[in-house]
Length: 275
Image 1 (cartoon, rainbow, N blue to C red):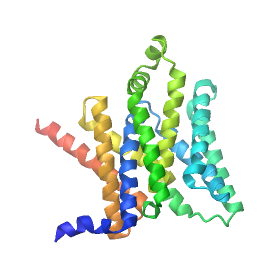
Image 2: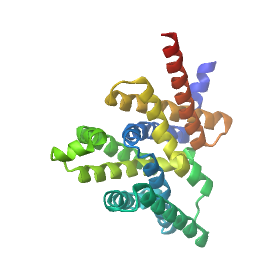
Image 3: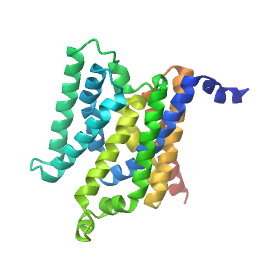
Image 4: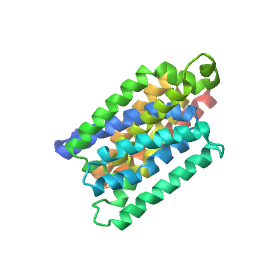
């Protein structure tokens, strides 16, 4: 029966671990993606993912977990990028581009020098959620919980700064502080997702479900919730594609997210013409 195709993959422990991580990633990336879209920080998110490569490589070099290695690196990168955005005179995109390209190149140099590091570049770039360990699951759950709690607790501050940064500053809100907190939270969400969708495709899961939700909702809070729902659907759909068709997990999740966006966009256009 067709119902067997739904639950069969989860008779294996590695698929259950993958499901937990996939749902976590599907929730947190679009949740922050709504802010990223509103603040035009898509390039920032992509830069954070690529710039984390040296931390990942160094951590593996000393035998540490990807999470343990990348989290301090991601936080430092987020704060440096925040500083450059506020203080740099060469332009925001230029400063981000320099950091992004130089650190990404440094990461590959480390990998080439220490070629004994057991790291698949393909898995790193495109993700391999089916290979997550129990430690990865717990690390992802802890990071996801911290991210969701922080985002909800600081919802009003993040929202105010996103829509009216000048007004927030005039009202006495410490805009720079909350900007840095948001960038740190964003960096943690990206790090927690790299093993699932990879460095290259993190941006897809960060932006695409949130963009689809923006087409269907009228309020920002509803967009955040709907985006996370779309993200979970895309993540689980990608898991099924990866299991049954032997597709790489990261690209499968990214294409599922894109499919959701296209369906929502076409449905919205059809409804507009019908009315």
